[in-house]
Amino acid sequence: MNAAVLVLDVGMRPLRVEPWQRAICDLFLGKVEVVEYSRDRTIQGATREWPLPSVVRIVRHFKREKIRVKFSRINIYARDSFTCQYCGTRCVSEDLTFDHVVPRSRGGRTTWENVVSCCVPCNRAKADRTPAEAGVRLRSRPRKPTYLPSITVRLSSPNIPAEWAPYWTITLDG
Image 1 (cartoon, rainbow, N blue to C red):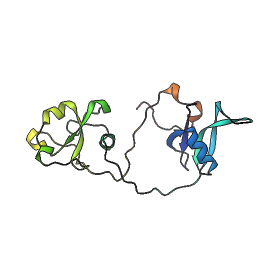
Image 2 (spheres, helix red, strand yellow; image 1 turned 180 degrees about the horizontal axis):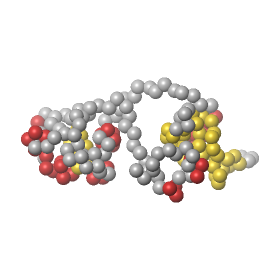
Image 3 (tube, rainbow, N blue to C red; image 1 turned 90 degrees about the vertical axis):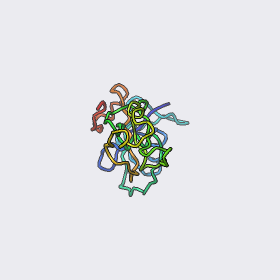
Image 4 (cartoon, rainbow, N blue to C red; image 1 turned 30 degrees about the vertical axis):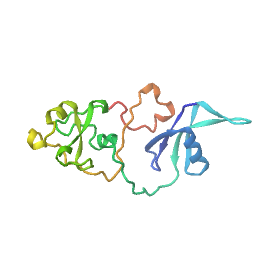
């Protein structure tokens, strides 16, 4: 069975979507409480069936740990909001590359402070030059994020369980 559970924070705001198995573990550990059960899915036990949680709420506030944000292509794109840092075009990840502001051939390193999201046409135009030499300007100065960038997963209406509707407060197709 492939079912997801909506996890709400203490204030009843959507926090994440997780597999039902993790939600069940958190439920037995006392970390979450069930807000809504699925109307059409159950968990088959050895002797009986239980309703599958569809929406759960975290029981208490938690202190966020300082996390080390991993340098990766997707985290660069998320940090830059999937936007070319030269022309400002918003792209899907397949249409983005990342560009070294100071080219590697000139001693530029692959670090948070020297790599930006870039569309393919701008990357070709800039080539092996600095932004000043190529006549382009950066939209924002690249920095190492102090948080884990979040990536929005778009769900189409038929895929969203009915039980989530009262808690889903964001536009899904934005």
